[in-house]
Image (cartoon, rainbow, N blue to C red; front, side, top):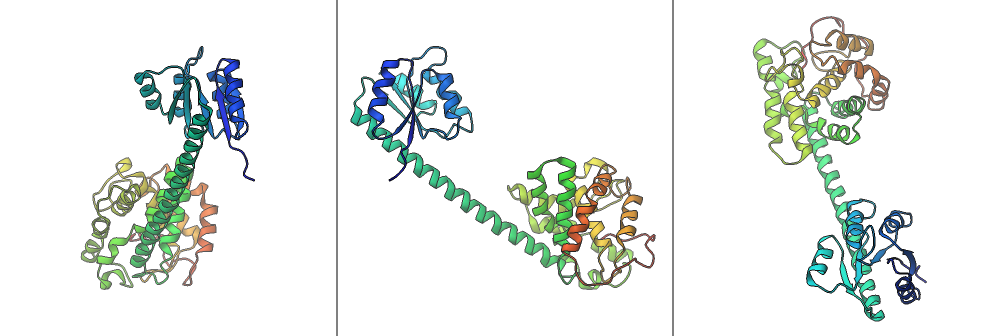
Length: 356
């Protein structure tokens, strides 16, 4: 046997509460309140009522005011409210519906009509919840698909100069760790995690002779390499999605430097977006500690020393201490997504490095 649904009856007249409760009890579990303030408290309790049947004319908080407060509270706004009142003017009914009520029943009541309307609105509320859940599930599915495409496109670009493509995974997680510690904003941190894999998508447009060169680039070759942020921004394009906006922002700004000597726009200080400044540290740390065609992997100690040296030059001086704060977690990620290749220090760890 199905459990009875709960209806909260709100009326300042004890006799009317008794009459309505007598009608409802054979079918519903009934809760009662004699004023709006008490109704609000009961509605916000756990378990909440499935529906509220409420008088309009009550002292202090009338039905309209009570409904307005219920609909303003995220906890109670989805509970259907039906007004039960002796007011029979069209304007009164219109006002009640505009405040969020689902129905308006005039007194004196007809028990069969009241029961029929309650059943109808409970069924509609159930259908609405089911629809909303389906929308949530479908939206999550679409988001997961979109994120998978973004991550795979980012790895596709990385495969061109890193055979495992794990760089984009590691630097994305590094970026999230730094972002969360710096902003204390989990939502924004997740956004940077999912946008960062596209940071080097522009490398798709760089010739292999330059991208895979096992040595330092000439000035002419480096000029070509410096085009990849704008190429990446062009590939990502313009979108209304916050995720794609950030992906473009990071692609375009992760090679800018704090002192204004970076590329492509020579931005300096806080004129570089914070997402780009965070991605810059994550990207360089992983690039230094990973073997590439043009370099062997640096040790963690040498890479950290290099980031310290470039604090206030290449990197935001406020973010470098945050990087140190989360370094143990970064090293856990590095170990989890490690890849085969040369380890240990570069033969010349103190030498000027081309971050590409």
